[in-house]
Image (cartoon, rainbow, N blue to C red; front, side, top):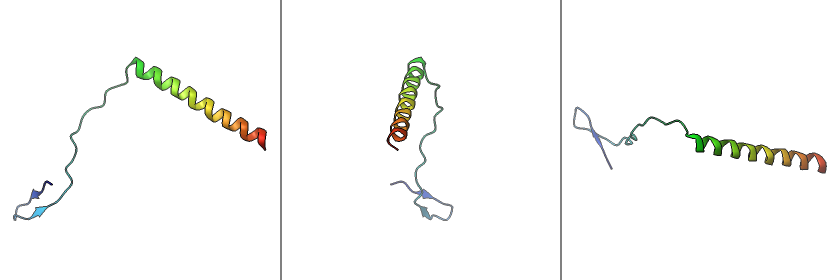
Length: 56
């Protein structure tokens, strides 16, 4: 476990911050997968709504 030492010699047990990085934009394959998953999710929600309306 890492500690930080202050001016007076006191030890503080703070969490170690993760290294920062810059996010990269999605490539064409990832964009296509997002569209496919979104369409599947919309179809699932639409089907569930259809079942709920038809049962009630």
